[in-house]
Structures are given as C-alpha cells and as structure tokens.
Length: 243
Image 1 (cartoon, helix red, strand yellow):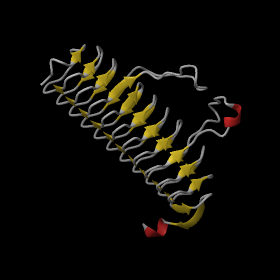
Image 2: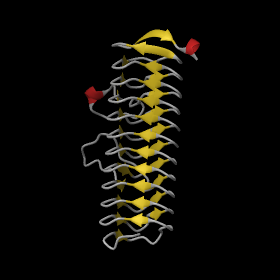
Image 3: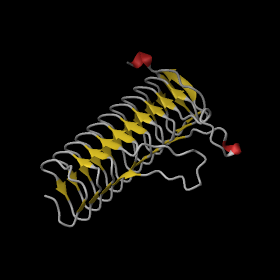
Image 4: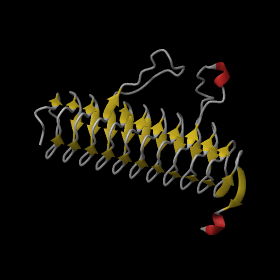
C-alpha cells in the first residue's frame, strides 16, 4: 500500500511495497520489492534500497555532506547510497551520501553514518552510534549504543564494540589543519572486543582476538589475543590459551 499523502518522484518501485504518509522519495531513487517505508522518511536521488528492507519514521537517506566553511577536511563524496536486502533502518537515522550497507544489517535509532562509510553484512550499528567518514566495518560486527567511530578507521569482521566507546584520529590538533597522512583512526582486527567506555587513540591497532577492558585508554598497539586494561592500557595476559 502506498499512501496518497506520500511524495513519489520516482517510478522505480518494486512490488509489494508499503510507503506511508508524508514520506518523500525523490526522482532517481530505487526501491526494491517488499520494502516498508514508514512516515516522514526522506530518500534522496541515487539511493538504492534492497528487497525486504524496513525504514522507520524520520530516517534521512542520502544526506549531502556540508563543510559550511567550518571543517578543515575537504568534503568529497559520490551522490549514491546502497542499502542491502532485509535491513532495518531505525527512526531518525541519518545516512549520508557515499555509503554502502550490506544485507541483513540493523541501524539503530538516531544512528549516523558519514560519507565513504562501508558497513558489511549481518552487522548491528546500535542506537545513536556515530560513524565518521572513510570508515570500513566488516561482516557480523556489533557496535553498541552511543559509541563514536572516528574518520579513517578500519573495523574488522566479528568485532564487538560495547557502549560509550570513543575513538580519535588526530594527534596534530594544535595546528588546527587537516593532514591526511597524519589523521589516522584506529584499526580493530577481526574477532576483537572493546569494552564499555574504552578510548582508542589515533593510529593504534587492536590485534585479532584481543580484548580491551572497560574504560581502558589504548595508547599503543595491542597484540593479537592480548587482554589489556587500565589507563594507559597494559597487558594483563594473553587469551590464546583459552581458545
């Protein structure tokens, strides 16, 4: 069922689609089969929604990034968004242009994904998570409520990142300029776990299967399967023997 109060500027709409009142689907968007779009959703040109995906009220998909003269980083993006099959996009989520989301991925209420973000299949990006520009996230990864993933970050597959985790990418803040070679986010390898409230500083690498304890501040690389805790984070033991 498509409400007569929805604004439809595209004819590229699949079969068995529901579009509720006051949603806006712009020309150049493509909606797959069995998609459900709730009220007050905005879908801009160049957005592709996969079969069976559900989009909840107030979501904004295809937001153009704006620098407004306030950002040191130059803004660059492709005006396209791809959302895979059987995804769930939560209320008031914001997906900027130049984002790709794999199939069977859940985006929680109020989550925000900036340009050049790539999210894998079967992922959970929970409520009010913010993912900054040029970040990749592998398959089967879960990022929990109120966490911030910084720009130029790499997150592997089967990673668990708990609530209120922060990550940073800038060690040259004194100069207030953007140097692409120095602005590097953390890298979290496959199967790693980041505990609640942990802080990952610029450029650090958390190795495969490593565990960062709650509220730890990671200032240097963590080796595979190491458990680290504290401020700054220090190795407590290696977890390889527990496998």
